[in-house]
Amino acid sequence: MNSIGSSKKENAINLRKQGLSYNLISETLQVPKSTLSNWLSKIDFSKEIKAKNISNARQKASENITKYNHKRSISYQQKTAQQILDYSMQVEKISRNELFYIGLGLFLAEGSRKEKWMVRFVNSDPLIINIAMRFFREICQIEEKTIRMRIHIHDNCVYEDSLEYWSALTKVPKDLFYRPQTLISKSSKSKRNTNQLKFGTLHVTIMNADILRKLIGWTQGVASQFDNKPG
Image (cartoon, rainbow, N blue to C red; front, side, top):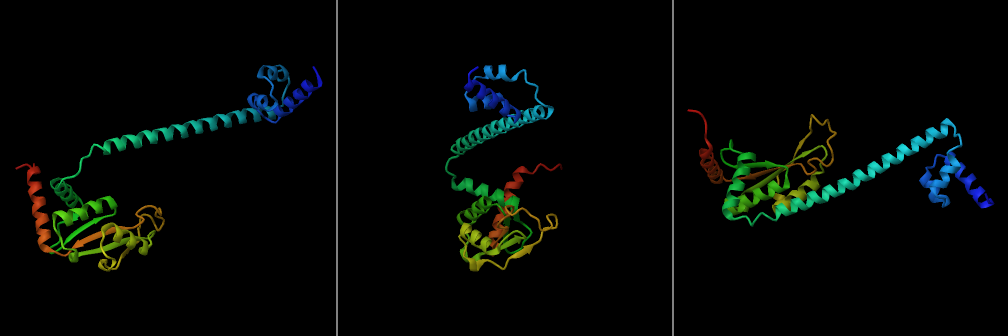
């Protein structure tokens, strides 16, 4: 063996003792793995070196699995996002009649029917609030001057940010918002996730008893078609 080959062999042995794999040694020294096998297979490495080699191999395997799972996760997310987009494209422009029933369904779920002279609607989801406000304006024909808002903020909310957010979303001036109500969650014990209900919960109030009666009448008309109570 020439001096260059001898030097590479010594380097290979040293690198192997450091726990490097055959692949990495081969890439580093530009030596075929078959040659490394001839050089290294008969050398009795210490238990510590063998343990380190095994540990490195396991770590490498773990890293490969992590990379594979990450790549697979990205692929799944992209596929899911495309499917959702495809389904969203199937929805045609919502008609006035469809908005009537969508809004009425939301009022059935989130509106209060216990009030006597005003409409109250409560939610923290901006999409639901957006649909509800369009329903109130376009279907119920409410007057802007009858709208009042109150934000129920939680221990993780900044009121000024919440006011700015809901005012912009609903297109209701800030001076039509009542003073906020602060709610400290007993369950979260002031440790609520900062991204959870970041802008609090919005209470929409419409100061018009006739609109309330209209909504209650509409909901009763719908409910009567699904009344399957015995007797």
